[in-house]
Length: 123
Image (cartoon, rainbow, N blue to C red; front, top):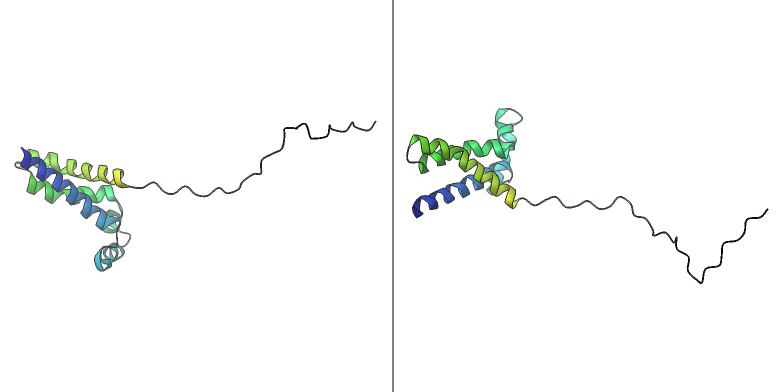
C-alpha cells in the first residue's frame, strides 16, 4: 500500500512539474519558451498556454504507467491532473497589491481649545 501511495505522489509531482515547465517557464536554454512561441496561436499554442488543459494531457502517460488496470488508469488520469492543479493553486503567489492612485491629507475638522471661535457673519 505504501509503495502505491509513493507512486501516486511521485506521478502527481511529475505532472505538476512538467505542466508548469511547459506552460509557464522558459526552461533550460529557453527551450520551453521557444516551443510555446513556435506553437503559435493555433491549437498547440493554446494548449501550451493553458495549465489546466495541458495537465490533462501530461497526466495520460503517468496514469498509464502507474495504474494497474484500465479502470484505475481512467480514474488516475483526471486525478493526476487535479493534483497538479491543486499544487499550482497552493504554490501560486497572489499578485502584488498595486500602489494607491492617490492619497488624501487628513482633514482638521475638530476644533481644539487653542483655536479661535468662528467669526460671526457680517449682517
